[in-house]
Image 1 (cartoon, rainbow, N blue to C red):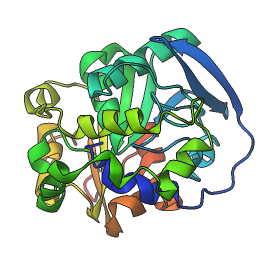
Image 2: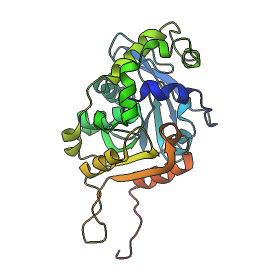
Image 3: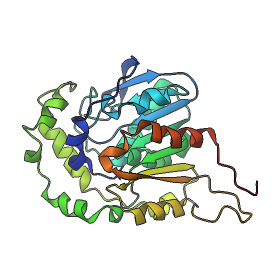
Image 4: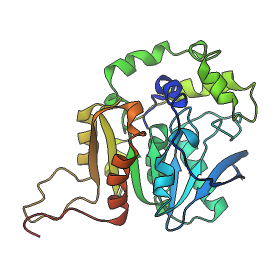
Length: 287
């Protein structure tokens, strides 16, 4: 999603991943890199996009849960996990194009997409730049404008330097999977640069027809006001018992939940995601 990348990455990498069945892992050439991905489950395709500094295992139990009813394609972005880094900036348009090219390479014409944090922003950019690729979008902890970030995070961005991460447990965790274990500094430099990239997609989001499930914690790195603004841009927030159809998009706020706690609440996440992907809505008194 938004670029809290550097701030939350270390925490996410040190959390214990949920046990999951063995998926099929392989790599495919995408934009000059060998992109690693894993396929699990059967059904309609669902592309899963992890957060900054994360990898597939760090997404935990939500992937095998979704694989019970979908054919899940979980990828690892540039420089993350087992995908090699390349001499190219990490930007949301670049990440989105990588996903589009990945889908072409493995023969996915169109799919549902679930992204978390940086992956959610990449998924949103994918829907904007390649709308023909995205059927429905689940975006957990995402912002469409940098002004929607918590003030504390905005104050932190100018202080970010590679030395905050080099030599830390985060670097050791990154090296476990990295094709080039000596490439951590340039990778971190690219990720810090991502925090400074412009992010102001309001007009593009408003014009977007893709149904969207917006998920966030009530103590996330995005303000609650911004989440409501995003939901309203997607046509949500009107009364549902007064004759007008519901918006195709939805908003779910997880209680007592920080940014890093969002992805670990597997059953709660799944309880929101699966009905959305299946097009199921609760019935009101007048239906």
